Length: 635
Ligand code: HEM
Image (cartoon, rainbow, N blue to C red; front, side, top):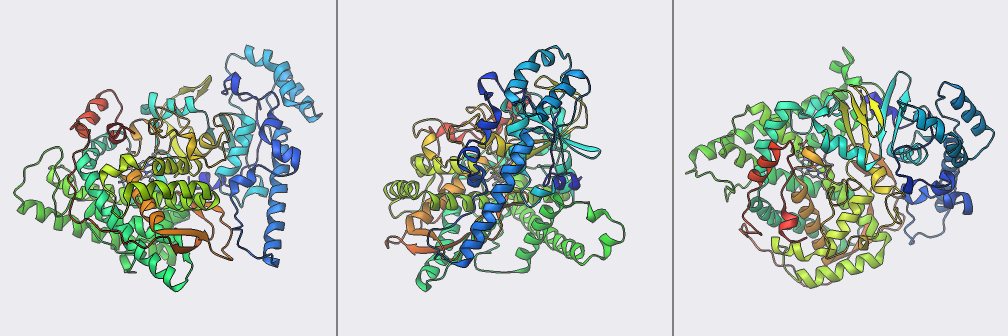
């Protein structure tokens, strides 16, 4: 199954009908080709340049290296432009049988424009009682070096909001249409499972919340969501501040020594430290420490990512899986993490047993406000193995996602200095010399918009994976049970049909006095945390985490790309990584020290409505959303 994901790195293409039937008419371009690739066709610059986000930092001297990079980039753009016009010409289109399709394909090869063909053949497709999903064939070697979601975008522009991508006997449905995404994720979610994703992640997450389906998922979601109640998240703000303060100290040293610093790995360590404390009260202290457990976490994380892009499921090959040094290392790492988690669970159990416990909806132990402590105190009747699976799942889900958001936000800010200075102005006036508190979250409006916009341009993860458990209708197309589906959040968030200046980093597109954008108020064109019952349980936690970190960092420092830094390009695992890090030069902005506020803030936010209760009620209707902090905070 991992091979499927891997295959998507290098699709080659064709379609049964390049007419994107799922586009509303108003969104259809009169000339798909010119609408899709305007700048490429008119000025020789492929619009994809903005998406691949190679960066020259402006500080680089004119050097041979620069020239080599520019030349490589030119070749890359040329290759893309050629590929795009080959897709649009129908070269890769899977032929439909029957006279109209044969005629259409022949006319297409003769160079008749797609919009004219669409017009002529509309009549035939209208009479087709059972329309077939446009189909593209995969195998283009020319694009195998790219993250797989990039060619999917080009295919989407040609084939529309739903198309089938086939690789030999295997095929995937690629969904980039908000209405179909809403149907799969929310309206008919019970008809879909996590499919391939669950198979790939089983080795590390077991039956944890992300891969689990059916009753196990339902029971675990009911147990876990209440743990992320308002008082808990408010307490976490303090933790975010303290962890970011440790990162600031590191940056301070770098600024004093004039050292450049690789931000992506620091963000990864920052969010690991946070999630360890937040989940099971364990201080990885990875910003200052390189203990074996940290290496073990990264070994397991990288293995999960490798498996998701592997050409064959190498970890299932008999004998080899037992003798491969890499697999041995992974197994040892897993054992170390599992032992550590088991140990933490026992320690926590003992704490709970000795506690004079009065459990209630917003229960929180002041010494150990972790999710694990809440779950044990709640009397959650669950095996240690299940608990471990859940903790491991959240450790992975809540670690690299937040780190990736911070990485790409800093990259985007570097490219848009006006946004950076507006952001710094807001942080200066809202925070002054304090650590952020829960109350500041509603006042850091522009900071939140910067994160909203960063999540639009770099969604983590860029695709959501599902498998149909029964026959269904997607838009006007019937589909069978057992279809593997990729909902491309990347395509939804970057669609030129759904967004004005889709590739532009423009936090102003979200009005400051408007609601916090989410899947509901954006009608599923915006899915930073997914949607429907399987929406992220950590959405509010993560939003505040990245807002606090961003605010504290830009308050104290200015960031520039380091001289000679490698270009910033994307590669993908579970989240979007850079290929060679985000190397920056950090300078101190203003000197007043930020005064830490210690202790757990117990701030009552908005109404006392209990998340678990609301969650439970909606669950009865088949939908379990998350906290409603943003609404309560008036965002
Ligand atoms: C900015 C950071 C984060 C982003 C962008 C993010 C994004 C997402 C998305 C898109 C999903 C839906 C996946 C799907 O439908 O297939 C998801 C699910 C999930 N996330 Fe997050 N997440 C973030 C942080 C966190 C944190 C901090 C936690 C834990 C505290 C967490 C725990 C989970 C869990 C457990 C699920 C599975 C929920 C279920 O299937 O019921 N996430 N996340």
